[in-house]
Amino acid sequence: MLGNEHHQKNESEMAALSPNDLRHYLTQRIATSDENEGWETPAPAKPDVEDLGPVMGSIHEVVGTVLKSSTGGVPRALLVAGTSSRSPSPQAAIDIARDLTSRNEQVVLVDLATGAAAVSGRLNMPRVPGFTDLAVGAADFADVVKLDDGSSLQVIPAGNPNLNDGYDAPDNFMRVFEALTQTYDCVILHADMGAIERLMPALKFELPVAVAVLPPRATPQDEGTPLSMIQRLGCPIVVHGMPMKQTQRRFSLFGRKVAV
Image 1 (cartoon, one colour):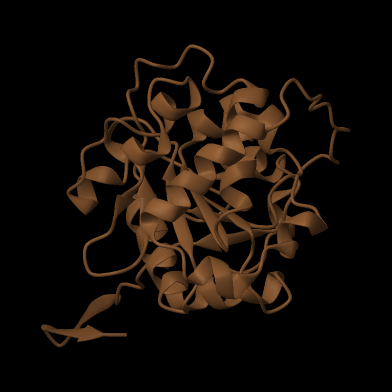
Image 2 (cartoon, rainbow, N blue to C red):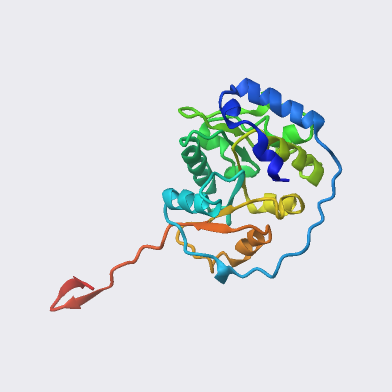
């Protein structure tokens, strides 16, 4: 629930908090959060990939578009999702999070992905304990919040993939998510398509914006099915991908190769 109460926290006070202070605050938020709320939401209109805007080729373009979609400010939450196992979404999520952190914002990158799509390997961090451990009560914030080398970005790794019994229940997920959004200026969720499908009841209509990361040389039309699933979240989508390089056609002219 990203209501007006999220903006009542004194920003200067939050900026002065140390990582330990943030962890303590988060633990308090979890202890006092309301549980067992309903998450039923009306079904959105049928998604249409053709409604998506142009593909953004650089992180600079992506961040600029995200900020514009949030009326010029940093969004309270942001989803970065790979449309395929070949999508470079882990690095995109890290780059976006570092960019927003460099703007003197308190940012946390939360990994919800599984397998090779996890961000922890690229950050030389242990995957466990992490978000799954936290959501099922097997760990607390002091155990899972890590610091990015060379920046003030804070990271919560994906956690134990075997602890999937109940972590993605809407109330379990949302009590952690709400505590994070009330503590940090921006919560960046990195997810694969499996995580989005599992967390759809909790995430639907809760996100201000999402970034969909395409595989190399793919177009939105190629990734229509996963993009449609991301559209079901009911938020604006920024598409990030590398444009396909144009190859030069060559033909022979008097026995010599000529590019056209």
